[in-house]
Length: 204
Image (cartoon, rainbow, N blue to C red):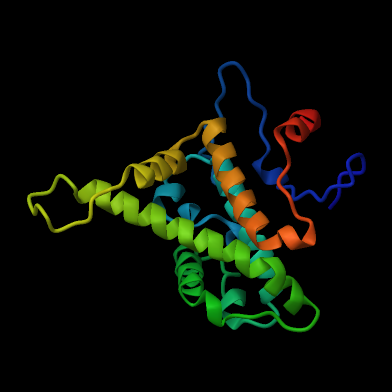
């Protein structure tokens, strides 16, 4: 879809829309979404139990999964396997896909788009999910009785983990800007550039 005023592409999930009142009943933990495109956080029992809030970073992750599915589902059976109503199986399929990311490729007209930016976006997501998981593990085990058996959690990894878990707009903005910087490093030769703060303010 496209915004007729700005001419920019728009990905909309109306099933995520809700009215926020002074005393809102909506908590951000409502169970919504299309399974193949959902963030891996949501493909868990915790999400089904309403224990994981919907954050803006989940929307960014969802867009990346949509991109991967759109470009690869015709050529890669592992991607077509995301299309299941079984949350746990979809999560396992996605994580297995990321582990073998470099062996996947699109076909036909989609091949150039995959090589140009699709694989870069999924690679960014893969590295970030790995880093967050490692940081969470290090934090959880650093006070165990087995001293010296785990890596130290660096201040930078601590910051990344805190930002990942935060529900603030500042944290969401930082994650999105990090993604844009990464994509800029891959696509600058094609004219891709992140929006400036002035452009963001003008469009809001």
